Length: 267
Ligand code: NAP
Image 1 (cartoon, rainbow, N blue to C red):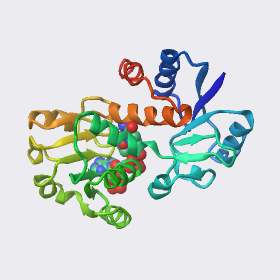
Image 2 (image 1 turned 135 degrees about the vertical axis):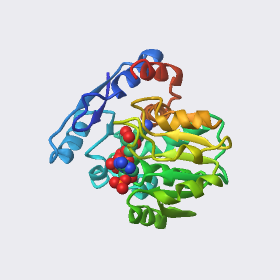
Image 3 (image 1 turned 45 degrees about the vertical axis):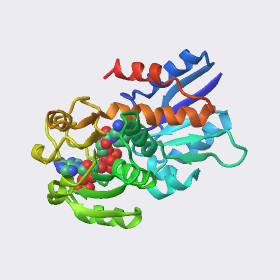
């Protein structure tokens, strides 16, 4: 029996257990996916303990993603993003840390036939999700304009991301006029029916990914659909960060349809 899990605090409402267990069921794997909620000062002990107990892989979520970087051997992309959300214990040395949020966003967009090579992308938000998406899009060949409520954070991030520029939210309308891709990486739209982007800045040549997945249909995505844009909801990004973790851990192609069904039936 292989054991996988999620380290976070809190982890009560996580959709990762049913999503990963659907994959094990589909492929007939002897595996379980469980949640762990260590104390906020116990991350290192938890990771070492998991390694010693033979846990095969862990996802990491709030508030541990940044601290995990210091405990595992991170891949280059995770180091640049500054956060680890997936740990693989299969090697003989220290566990390896990955950030699959970036790849999750890219696979979500590509799955909707969005071409990222030389695309002009606008990322709204410069927190954890914004960092992951900005580095991911740049690695995929896009030029990235990062706009954030706190403008200095966007400028600072843009200095680290290739071919990126940093802006305040006031620039979003102008940036979008020339853009092919828009990603909302803020939490706006989660708590209330609000959008970080004026509806009349959206247009039919855009692909719009909203990282928010509760609710699935945000105001931004409704506005985008009305403007004729391609829309990609946050569950696709959540799905593909899980798919990527599954593939890192098992070395097998993930059963994407089964994982997607398990996820969407709970949203
Ligand atoms: P975070 O690190 O706390 O960053 C929050 C971001 O939202 C910051 O850029 C912040 O701007 C901005 N923001 C918050 N309230 C705002 C407001 N009222 N107006 C404008 N901007 C505002 O959070 P995170 O981890 O990046 O997560 C952001 C969102 O992405 C959440 O909804 C999360 O659920 C979602 N997410 C989804 C996935 C997925 O797989 N679908 C993965 C990761 C995250 P300031 O810097 O100015 O505070």
